[in-house]
Amino acid sequence: MLAKVILDFGSARMRATTVAIPDPGPLERFLPESAPGCAFVRRGDGFVALGEVARFETDTLEAADVWWDEISDHIDHDSEMPGEFGTGPLAVGSFTFDPDRSEDLSVLIVPEVIVGRRGELSWMTRLGPAHRSTALPPVAEPTRRPGGLEVLGGSMGEGVWTDIVAEVVELIRRGEVHKVVLARDLLVRSDAPFDLRHLFGRLLAGYPMTWAYLVDGLVGATPELLLRRQGGLVTSRVLAGTVWKDAEGTDPLAKAAELARSQKDISEHEFAVESVASALAPYCQAMNVPEAPSVLKLPNVMHLATDITGVVCQEAGALTLAAALHPSAAVCGTPSHLALDIISELESLDRGRYAGPVGWVDTQGDGEWAIALRGGQVRATAPSEIQLFAGAGIVADSSPEAELAETAAKFVPMLQALGLD
Image (cartoon, rainbow, N blue to C red; front, side):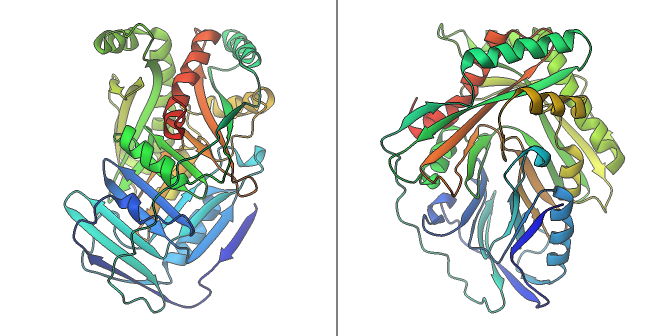
């Protein structure tokens, strides 16, 4: 295990204060360009987080879970709204898809200031040894649109990628594995360091039904919630099976019917549902797994979707559950250990924190962790480059050309945010 504490509380007690505030308006307007900031927002609800009181870099969810438990024990929290979901001190993080095969580290950040909204409730939490101010942070400077953009291509050409898909299909048909999720990337360069706040705002506007996230250089808008733990309940939204808009402008209802009848997509979805249900079962006293999926409609694609719910054991916090669920068949394949080996051997791509958990946890173990999809990553060593990612689930009936088209559709949200649509 590799772990690195950048800032730490030491043995000192820390005081958190949470106060109710008037509706602050668009949360993203508080994100500054010049200082660390995180965000997790869906349909206007969620939070932005400013500053860092503590930061933990690691290669395992389990290590992050232990560290956060220790940090939580040092926090005294005064709140005007005790028990309200998502209020109070939080840890915000994103984790690598495969820590054994990535040069990136996962990160868990304890922010200094949080401004949040959920429904009619708005709040601010400040964390630190002497915080007493109830003033909102200042509205930040306007965001910068990227300029001089150049698409540099990916780690492999489209023809190479479709050849790999065909190779994986043969492995599946021979019975060596049931499903493998293959990803590809695009590198985009700007003439100046990216202002990720601009991309985040564009994603919020264009894809309000998704969970928009911004954590330590990772930005995107994902439709897939790995889990929400709220009190005694856990929910996981499973997405697998996809159709996308075509040039002919096919009626959306016809596309939805096509998806619901597609044996290939139904098979892919069933693998993903089974993997999540099996992973959650040891932590739940009871579970509900719908017999058939629904169709989730997004601006550019439709997915088969299943919401799994369970009554969770009290000792299983959100990070514990995320460690149990990741990687699911929706982003890896099944059996997962075989799919991971195939991905490592054939994909020729370091996914970094793409397709890993991204989200937050509170001091009681409640929280929300999504899967970092429809996004891109900017690394500190190359602030003028962003690596975009998209993936597709490969099963026995997969067509390499269709899977390539699916990844192209999944690049669209980030390309639109960049202004390259």
